[in-house]
Image 1: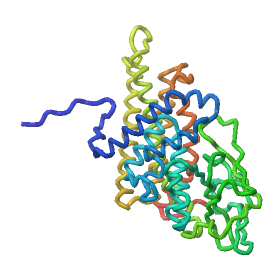
Image 2: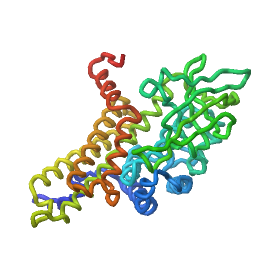
Image 3: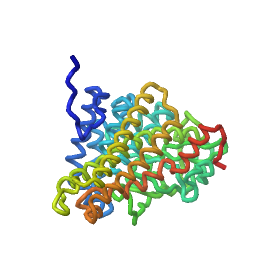
Image 4: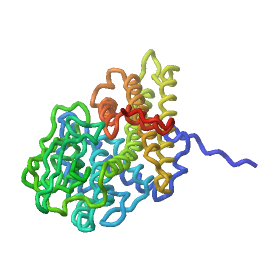
Length: 394
């Protein structure tokens, strides 16, 4: 006798929760509950005002639930699996991309760089406080004139006796104005090196970037390094060359693969609820074939994207995830997430542009997510090179 099939779940049409362990579900539910309590009631106001006024308090709360550097081991970090970290990113971005960016930059960029390439003294000095949210970190790679081509960076670190002296500028740096430590990448006579820069060091400043129409509930800054003098032990000793920052970016991109699906899920769920309650021509919008076609296509791409993210997470946990595969996920999931958000906007009509609904906020946020941590074109070229063996970057 065949077993009775479980009922169809519109919220999980592929039954993807069956892939998750109880510990995974506990992490997901913890982060989802925190975001529902501490972000969702306020984020529209933060977005409208273009600020994140409680960022230090939020960082400490995120530290308390183990969300900062959560996939790292030791030093107060949670040591969670890659899948659990991904689920956390999905839930955070389901609230707002700016909140997920805060966590990504803190854990996958700044903390990851120190954890992987720093000295034991650097790890002890920074990581426990960063894991607790007591110190916020930022990651200085992109420059005003060099985004997709970091090898051409102009920021330079020069030896002066046993000290290093840094000069240059970094641009579009999440958390910059509130950071206590900046991981800054600079040219040196021996190649590109990373530095753990205490932001109170003379010559360091981080003016906040205003007038953004995307990621408005997020702190974005320029970093200015004007004769910043650092001791010899400020350099990250574990790596020289672009391999260092690029490996950090790959870890952060992995979180985006999950996070983008969180933004898409929120917009999809909003569209479903609206289509079932909004009446036109004497019947709910969701009763029309064209609306159902849109919802069906959105659901297919949303849950395919989550399945892809889960697959990449299992590969990362097994130590088998390649950077090209991360590019595959980032390219697909962000692109599809934007399309889901835009389709949701059409279902909501004029209400779709109102901050009373989350759709336009997520859509505009994803315009930034589409191009940070590697533009669409760069990820296409990464995959193109992997597929053909031919380098088309230049």
